[in-house]
Length: 120
Image (cartoon, rainbow, N blue to C red; front, top):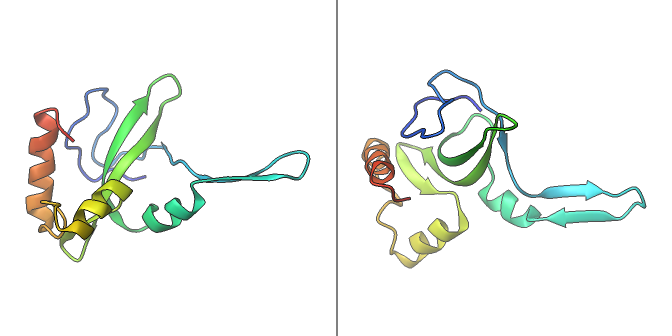
């Protein structure tokens, strides 16, 4: 993924313009005996990451292998923040999300403030 800006990076390694590897959960695997194992495929279709889209990602760095794992995200689309994780989508559906639909600049500022205070 291409990094546009960094809101917080305690582990170091992120910088605007850098390309990083992010491991996303879910998918299908065919075992040697032919059996297909699937994990979180339906959820990944609904809340996946799409090339060419913009997101605020919450990542965890795996320093021993120099990659990041994906915790959750919000998509930035049409100038607004859209939940892209199941828990945030549920809150938005119930009308209890204070972030869903927030203008992009305000959302990024709110996330920067939240992570600097240690909250997600």
